Amino acid sequence: MDKPFVYGMSVEGKNFTDRIRETAHLKKDFIYGMNVILISPRRMGKTSLVKKVKSEIDDPKLKVVMMDIYDCRSEYEFLNRFAETIFEQTDSKAERILENVKEFLSRVSPKVSFSPGPGMAFSLSLGITPKNYSPQDILNLPEIIATKKGIRIVICIDEFQQIGEFDDSLTVQKRMRGVWQHQQNVSYCLFGSKKHLMTKIFQSQRMPFYQFGEVNELGCIPTKDWTVYIQKRFMDSGQKISQRFAEKICETVDNYSSYVQQLAWDVMAETGREVTEKDFDNGYEALLAQNSSFFTEQIRGLSTYQMNFIRAICKGYHDNFGSREVQDGFPMGSKSNIDKIKKALIDREIIDVAGNRTVLADSVFQHWFTREFMSKVGDIAQYV
Image (cartoon, rainbow, N blue to C red; front, side, top):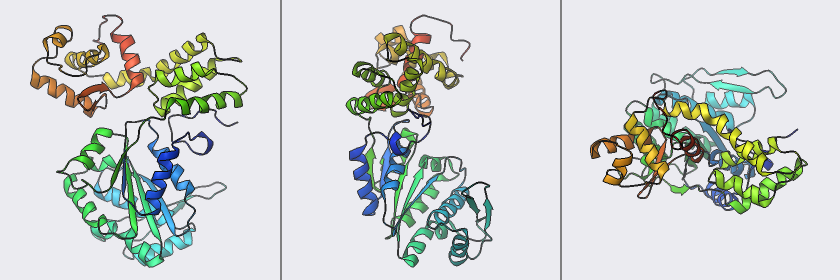
């Protein structure tokens, strides 16, 4: 039986909700070879959107390649992933892939491993090192392949902010930009889950990737579109949810895609025939309980001043944290210390800055934190 709601992973097919305008726009970017950068908070469905667009590309001369570099820790780990994925996703037969490797990267000895199962999936290992190929050679590989085969390639790289963690990252980024900006038959879709790092890479004038492509900030799916989806999923499962409760699910989690799906499922799991107030409350409690250990780990090791910064936001303060009014209720030390607190919490993805307002990055975290640390004074020593 199909899952009525999917969360914690990218979604495809009928689990993909709305994004009609964004899908159409990104599809045109792919077709016309525009470089595009997707920036948004976590849990907004960036990966699902890219997969949706890839599934709608039916031109055999346009190859869409998707890779995730979350676990890449160095430039050459990235280069191996980059080349291997391009070979694997621009052809379908292992024999032809090996022929392509021999033609385009003759100085490596590729290894192919097969996974047992109906599809006999395979993976390619190239062993690219500085001794056999330079970074520029590998970065220009897709352009060489596309030109020789008479195709166009769109390369979609998830968790792209990871390049900021490489040794001598600025040099690595300069090399990438220096090669990629001259390619005529290859375009790039770059996105990641850490908004502040992606923003730094692509929107700072001092960084190599500044103005590399069209920057799209992915917003929330509107409540009216979510409610149609939620009500249909309940109906398909033989249950009923009113528009009021469907809207309440969205509003409770600020329309964050993954949380909407999770809370909708938690409410459904508590419901008999039709959602009641008690069913909703029980689903909400389940949502908080499921995320509690993760949130506890997020705040582990925070100082009392850092905890006070979060408490001030929960209380409704979003700027002027050094003012007497804020400091009287939530001491944080000097202005320079407040700046350090702010940077540390941004780096940990606990807070986000939107214009002049500092907010918590995760609406469910805010619900949990408010309950744990705002409704009662409490002793936070167990967390810090």
